Image (tube, rainbow, N blue to C red; front, side, top):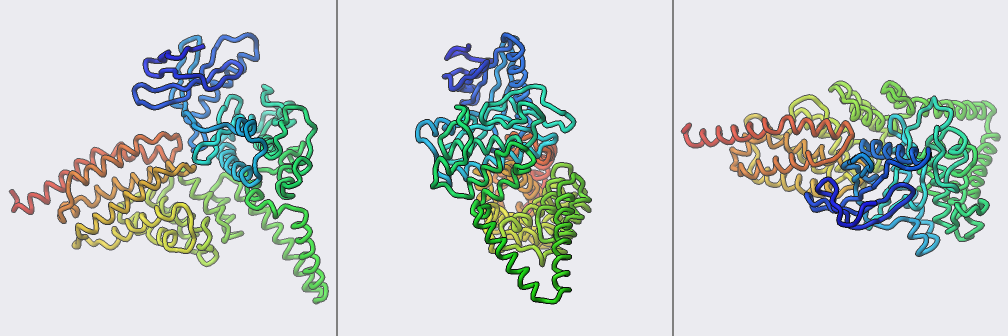
Length: 550
């Protein structure tokens, strides 16, 4: 055990113990070089027996796995130190209180609060399950969920998470927390549905205060608290079905029901049946051909739904384009294409093709919906990030998409940033080679960019790092591209260089393993010094011209 006051690797000073379990102890430590706090997990390598070896290997696997993840609800691994007998894993210190402590202190939690937490957990589990290969968390429970001061949930302790390999018939090691873990975790292959079971049991515990580890037979939540809604009871019952095929098949599917639990109640289902019967009854009064047509339409719709789901769950862009032809008004396939090309890089033709699909189906895409407005924002940003061409060409291609995202009635969390991008696009596309903007135009534009930066720097959603690096990248490109004109209207050279340096430093400070973030970081790093030289040269040339060539 490491004592308080010990300094590890010459910079991590142990302040106090903040948790322990099995073979590991977690400390709060201060980084004396950066003057910030980290959590340090200490793992003793020499235990007794096979189970100790399994735990050590699992904790090492945790560190290597989390290092490549990038989600605001997951702690970052910043250092791994192995001194031979002990391993120290240095990670983000998550401020807040674990949900098991909240349960112990306050008892069962309100339904609306538990649903809000569960939706956040669904988001991060979806992120883990979307990895290639998928990562199965396998230890969902209140003790591993931290409620931060801002109300957001963080998942901690990845000691038994594993990558899902479809060919494995069974996991090699049985680990988990009894009461929360699904049956297959003890006898078969775990998959994303295993985490859904554990989330269901976690929601049950949070809503009822009944700890599943105590061996109490499972009973629906309304038997413990009749004030809870029928909808949340139905959702949890479906999550904890013993057979995985009877549960929600994905966190995305679960999230849809959590957004409106009333829709899954028996009353709602009866209402749907009454509507269907009354519709069929009315149709029965019509001609037989009409009934036959209805039946054919319903059958065709079912085939289309199945075909769409098949296409959308493929890993091939061709499938996504085919899905768009089936249901042009659904945004899933467009988003899949954007995500695919963010991860794997895109040629100009690929980006233009996505844009053409959106334009072709614009009359079917309801831009008053936040998710559609964000789709327009995302394709605009892809033009700026991956389109191979001058900044003016990128701006010309992206302008219409940012205009829709920023100017519509839909309120979504990126709207202010979309407005900033639209201003950049208007600025770039309104300038000819013979005309210049006024000094006040540049001042106004850079003020708007600064405001947008302050917004993205406060964000902690799973797109936050991409929003940041994209805006920093555009800022550096913009200053380099416009430096000659900026010099001509008297924009201060040091201020221009300072803005570019600030964007550069902020970009390289981002910690991420996502390829579409690191690729932009690499572009900024490789081009920055060239851009600085270019800006200085442009200012010097303009100064010489204004001084009559001297």
